[in-house]
Image (cartoon, rainbow, N blue to C red):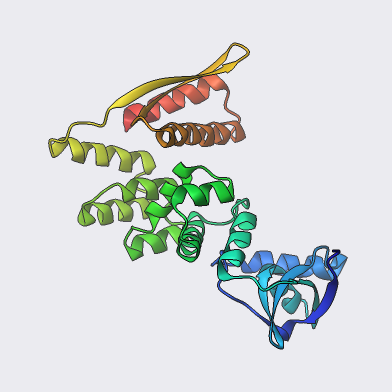
Length: 269
């Protein structure tokens, strides 16, 4: 059945908690200017709730339309009543592909989705099309103390460093490293190095490093040395390498330069 687009008064739309927690006001203003210039290119999606409507997808467009002075917005009204889990899954599936959604927002949304559905981490990963390693890392951020979580939300601490902080079980050390991160005195690699040094000072043996090779065919293969022996460990090592390689490419590095920089960083850690 073809979905019908209706003009719905903006003052009749209510906003439920969204995956996105922080809205860039400058971006909203830019979207409002675009709406005035070229109009609305994509309808929002709403759920009928008595005489009013509940936002399912498109809150940024509604905010921009209000800023532009519009009274109504084009919307598709869901034909069936959706559960909280249905709404969360749709929001996550859409928003997790957007680069501007922060890791903390993804982590909170993932926790809400798991609570609403009872799914385990591997089930959420499959539904959202992400790796179980990513699910584990994102959820680890939620175990951090609130001040560190706020620093992550505000972008004072990068998510990659947050994952390393989550591996530290001493609150005082964790808080000290977080403060130094926020002040720009150390990097993610510095946190990893401090964690390894602390483990060594406590007399704990280092985690086993396993060398694994994936044959890809066509004369290609990828060899990874990673901590642990699970597929998640392998995926995590590949994802971190890929992220650093893409960053190096954006900075104009060649392969030899990138490999040398990665080696220097590893030795410094």
